[in-house]
Amino acid sequence: MSGAGASVVVPVIAEHPAARGLRGFVEAGGHVAMDAEHCVRAVGTWRRIDRIGRTGAGMTPYPVTSPRRTPGGTASPRLEYEVSLLSAGTVTVWAYLSPRNPALPTGGLRYALSFDDAPPLTVDIHAATGADDGLMNSQWARNTSDNLNMTSTRHAIAAPGVHLLKFWMVDPTVVLQRLVIDTGGLGPTYLGPPESHRVDRGVTR
Image (cartoon, rainbow, N blue to C red):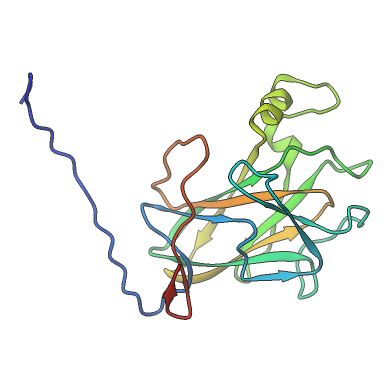
């Protein structure tokens, strides 16, 4: 049907997961979004930096003179986020990071991500995005003008349910603004999706 006054049929998928068993940030619309400061646990010393992100605060390991760390192990510095995913499969996790210069003379600027007990996946932020602060290239200029450096990792989720997403310190001075998990429904937005609903001990926030 076409022309003025024509109706358009839009398919809608309603998601109504059972509240029982949900914890942390709950998937909806094919994604989960969480602000860095809303971790369920911080291992090691981290500092909250007010208003550094495009939508709020950021989190960074402290002190800035810390040595490079190998991610993994019970004492390794990390931020942990509980998430409830509604299906199994491969997901993409986007890390929203503040543009920063490497603090160490070698190895770029790195962090790592993992789910549950899986081995951490390490990302060299500048190598992944092509931003070069030394040459002041166009990608570095775009990142600094947008106040954002986005990188991603892909992870296999074996089963739906509650999972623990871990953001590991590798290098000092990395500033995390947000984490967004794309389970297949994430659309393009300038600021990213609003933070997902959070269930904490049966209370939805």
